[in-house]
Image 1 (cartoon, rainbow, N blue to C red):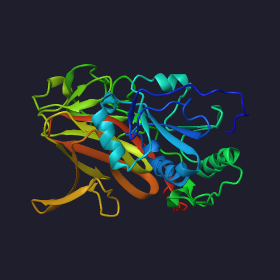
Image 2: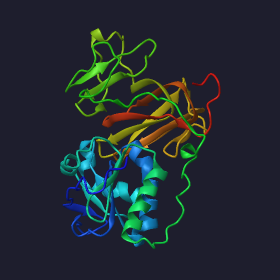
Image 3: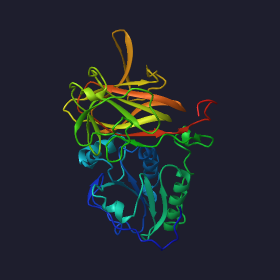
Length: 353
């Protein structure tokens, strides 16, 4: 979205920085500035980061300063060490300002992750875009501001899409909505709902429904996450005659791929088994986060959760309806939010929509 020149003055920024000494918009006057609000656990942000990094590399010497504003969604993402690791793993080399108290988020009246704001050489906001996409439009707006600084500047052609699902002809279907597991925003399908702010036993039998998750076993419910607890005998009211030997989450979803923000709240890592539609994942469905092993002659697909971050659970490459089961015997596995991807690089076969 273009904004009329000279109408909206950008607020100033900056206290704690990564990859840079503290910056201010006043000292950057005369340059174009791209502000990118992001969170290192947000799948939509993660998908835009290669473009933001590429723009930094293409245009820093031609008058553009890219500034990532990291406004965390979850408490653990406030910690500098976690953000530093995330920025390093994503290969980000542009300046990043830490906005853990949402000061810049509020100053920009921002309302989404990711969000991009382009500021011209005089310090006015000239372009804004919320969410993924519009990469060519955003880069064209960058070039327009750079030409205002130097009409003779030599600029490259607008980049081609960096992913197949961003190319013309790719199709985006409506996936399941983001699903939180903390009781403040979460949607649980178990009878009786969350046992808020305490550890309790959960049971589920029957067929899962859309847009909720189901817990089995012993879980601690907090406002922000659901945490696996050590096994203990189930109460008679649970409906089960004996306790399960593992804690499980069941989810029915519609998407091409599924992600989950997770952390291990114990000193050691947590192992999570993954099954889809009653079977371990195939190699074609696995993501780089998934491992395989043979246990007692049977194949298993699993993840090892250690660092707090977004984990890629499954990538089916095609849009479809599936039932996902995650199970663990380890206490201390914290589950925050599922996200789903609906874009595929080519139309989905009939019957998979």
